[in-house]
Length: 291
Image 1: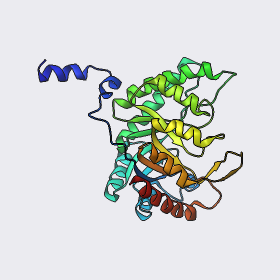
Image 2: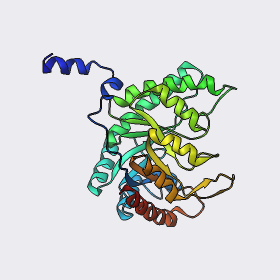
Image 3: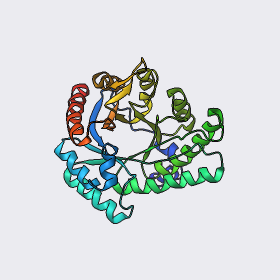
Image 4: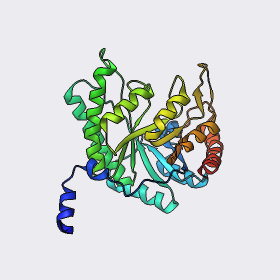
């Protein structure tokens, strides 16, 4: 087969199949990069006291590498605005590496699942315009008495279809552990393995497992494509309190994870004072465990 024939044949392959042939395995050593999740400033974004442009500039001020851009309050999805934000981020040396969207993939009706896939398509276009390589998605809650066993195929179907759309633009979908169908690591792993696409992984939220959190985090980490860290978590004894970040980041690094650790702040102290302090701590831990 000559080069022209090879390229034509490769172009005809499904996205997942063509993309599943890596040039080589990445090195085992962890490479951790601190990031800010826009959701940390949800009240300010909702009230327009802060803008997404402000958050890009704050990433510079607080010396973090990436912005995990929760899109709930974007003023526009027009190309002109998205490209202006992308340009600002580039000039600031900040990567808008991820966007976070709402999805409900546990819908029983086919027309509703079709609508969810179209929603993913819309946000893939937005992510591509921003230069983001990742989209955080939710599995969804169980509705109308549906069981996990009934809902898993619905979620798998949506993610397989979404993976084809996302992969065509080089974007990865990260399924978050966010209650509902994704309450437990075992179920998340079942879904991701059944989807079986290089364009679908796990968006690991370190504060969302209500029981045995470190065991469940460890189970998910081999499939993690983004990690969001919280300042608080539910401990093994059922109480809620500060998260042991040294333990969390050491665990993440032990798997050879390479990517962003995004601070998603939800505690009571005002974000304006808590977030800069916590990002400084996260930055130090990323350096400590990337060696």
